[in-house]
Image (cartoon, rainbow, N blue to C red):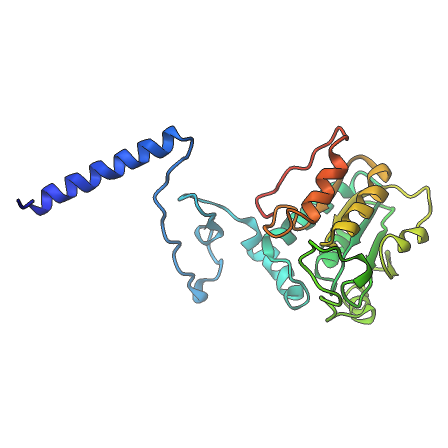
Length: 262
């Protein structure tokens, strides 16, 4: 028994529809995957159309303002001193910009080479706030061995390709930046007890360090302030950073929500 090519297409289409129906009954949503177009370097984000990008597994494109030429012109200046891509730096900058009008101090824990701190400082500099202050906490020498737990995805001295002198040079134009070299939570003792924070970016990766940051900053946030956790939604951090944060907030009225950037 033979089938014509047309009959074969009908059978294939029917099987695909049946398979889709079964998956939808199970609670899944099925989309046809579309391969994103390859970027053309000669047209790098020069038009509105190139600032719409795919976010798998969904087939549609969404506006990606971090690829706007104005933002990229700033990001390109620190591209070599940050591991954080454009989209996450965009959120850091604009959340800091939003919080600047609230008053209060800002902070970053886990500075590495200073790229993300640059965006926080820039947001403060451009704001109309008259009380600008940014505290930066880091060992400036890599991951501290004594705070690494068995489930943490990092090893001692990772991210050691940095120095306090290098970060100071990157942020030299911002006189309101204060550096606190050393380990967390010990370096928190250098902050005045009355200090209150409007925006804090936490990029410390480790279970114990995240728990210490939550314990210190939570009660010192002003109304409307933002705690932004890097890697909270990343695979590989569900039993370290995410666990520490979820444990801390389980009896709090606020609950973390995941940004599409992780």
